[in-house]
Image 1 (spheres, one colour):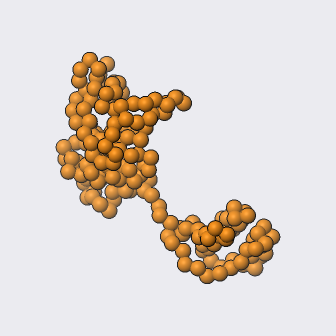
Image 2: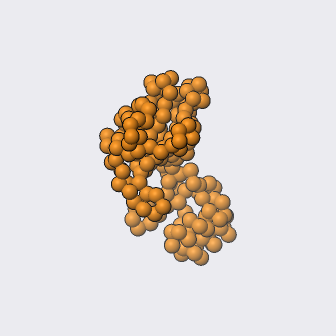
Image 3: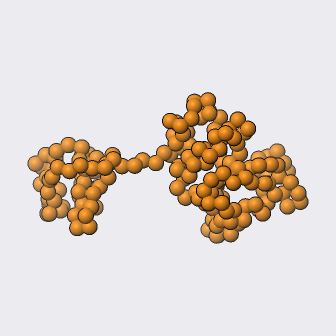
Length: 177
């Protein structure tokens, strides 16, 4: 029945999604933008006969940043924001960054921001050298999170156990071939 109440209040536009729903296990309390009209109360009580009105305090909903720039907007300067990497690799639950020397001083806050934007990420590493050897291995440097390189990567429906410090690197950047 709670879902019916949520749908009804959302449809009328009075459900306040900026605040968290409260529950005590038996009953839920929903935050509203305004007092409902008599018609809105009647419609809600047709769907949920036990619905009632009360005045409550609600906790603001925690909103996770959606981009790296958004996560760091209040932490670093505009100059640093403009130099952030436009992309990075995520393999399983591990991120691999390529940071220029000017961003090295910010590597930990950048890595923590990535983990905030991507809650599935558990470890962040930085590329720390060039691809080398017949196996085409690139050295990695641990930054933050769980200090491990073993992960489970899903590709085309297959689960692959991968150890990143032993994994070969392809020529995705187009400079090699």
